[in-house]
Length: 615
Image (cartoon, rainbow, N blue to C red; front, side):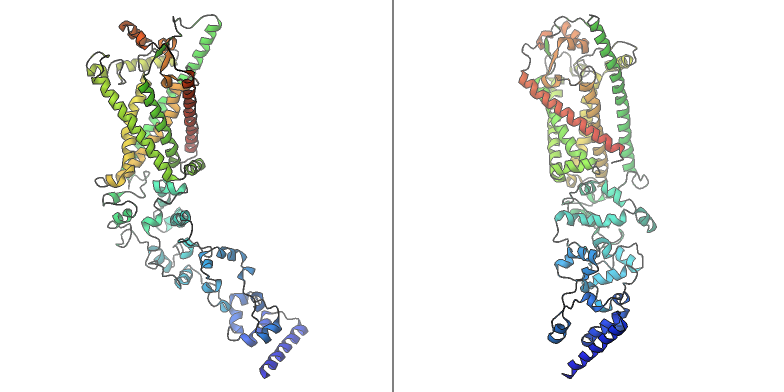
């Protein structure tokens, strides 16, 4: 009873002083509260704290609605809500793994009433996290040692996980959890200036993003690809020469084996951060890259110039033909020019359909990976449902490619050694007029076309195959070894890694990527122009879809073949009494125009991406 009276006397005196002098200091309210709560904090300690220095009062944090009820009846104040002042931080904390596990502000900010300003440096953050977390070898790691030595460029817990908005990696969405293993690293390792002053390799980020792993991550599908943490570890990250490092020479096979079952010592020689621009450290990659670049530039330079000259001369020729017709003169007189003849057999048409289907599948699924930094690539990959689905589709396209390549081999053997309707032994057939093998006549044809381009001579007529058709056919064989061979290595790396060093996969990646770029760019520009978009054929030549040519076109374009067939007396063997049905022609036209449209769109996307600096 006496204690209660004394307390009320004290409260009365304090109230009188406040009313008399108008004092509103934090000390006055604190004295009131400390009549009962002197076991929590002393006035001097609170005034020395961060909150005291900011002139906070007890009632700023502890909301007491009825002081009498609180004193007489022990009614507790409402819960402390730090968000009243720290609203943005509280919002971050509310969605964090700490909040989910009921870890509040005071659990990390120990001694809330005597809270002092955090010491300068990241070590205090590490110490705070270490109160609850075992840290899994962080203190001995490269990052931990840097922080302990006072290097503020070192990664503390907060640099990777954040301070308040900390995501629970074991409970969050798998994409978020997998991406974290790279997101956290890119923040610092993408800062080349920071890496340079710490003598750390500055190309880790761009070389990772250029790899298959990095491209899949960049496209938003890190679930089945290696993140930085998968190879380097998360907390226990050590230099390469440390025996405990996951990337140490003795441990690499096991590290790779976490994803690539059966990984060997040879397999682990893969250059995870190989850079073809670094000739000193990666000469094989540099030579391969420049060889492929030279091939790309050389091929496109020659054939794009060829197409441009052809387009100019073809447009001029069309005008000449129209002028002749207007004057009542036909540019060429061909009896029965309307009659239809067979140029391609059904198996030729079927093979070409396989080529078109497989090529479009490979381009549609491969180009988004090639240009992974582009928005359109992300849209396409999302449409497929992710890189895993795209890879599955890509391999279906590859299997179709192997089928038509096998058919081409069989047809070639049949042509050289079995067919009875072609005279001569196999060597004569190989370089004869019905063969797709380049020969001396092609030099004459190329020269004749160039002279025609420059208005120096007439447009040449050709035999069964002209020089650009032969180039397309030979390119299939070259492409199968370059794209097909490298693709198989990348499809089955564990198998090839049993007897080939891992850096071969780096070489295969460059070859596969650049040769695919050459193939798609060539087909969608040069081949499309030569067969469909040149002035003589625009908008499309359907001979490969129905196998049919009118005699007028046959004689005008392949006059030497027609003459040879006349001399042999076999022209009527190719006469077709009943042309293809209109429905068949309509279906093939829809298919053909769709294929060309897709190719042109992809070509535009490729050009825009290359000009924009994408790799």
